[in-house]
Length: 220
Image 1 (tube, one colour):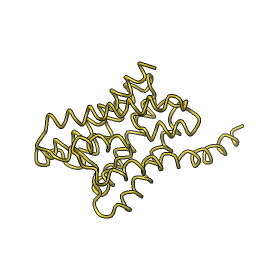
Image 2 (image 1 turned 120 degrees about the vertical axis):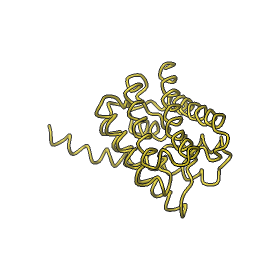
Image 3 (image 1 turned 90 degrees about the horizontal axis):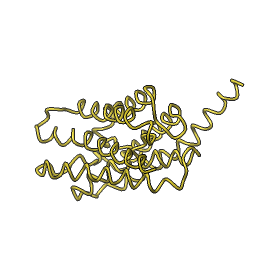
Image 4 (image 1 turned 180 degrees about the vertical axis):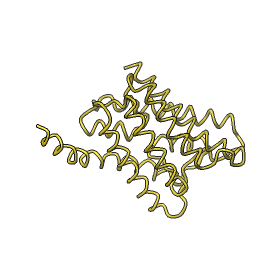
């Protein structure tokens, strides 16, 4: 379990450090990376971290995903607090490291809605549900591992960040939003990014189970 927790800490650290770091550096460099570059960064870092740590911890890097796996019966509930704690610690270390490196960038990659909070909540819910369904379909047990899982999950995250990022920030991950909010002291819309991804991931579990079970029965 110690190696798994270290892998979750490191994977979440690099996800938040690279993903929100791209936003921070884009701001500090006056748009050198651009929205497309930020979306690609999020997708690519997820792909790389799945390839790196998938065989060790399953490469969750997201409390909503860990809860989804536990709800689906693929991951022990007793390990959920440990995984979430490791993920939270990794994200916090990444955001506070960025805060020390770029003190002039106030938001530090925080997720802030453009327009109504309700619209961003719905977007985050739907996108996280789609993410969790994809993960459940391509993962092995409670592990995101292998080239197929990495490509599918990384591509989906990049795609969702590309089209929805300008509106809601495309978080899909409670600690990805919690860490920069704490580091920048910006809590106004944090509730959206804690509740919507969690609800979306949990809603995806019964839908995935219903969709997948007929396919299994027709193959027997």
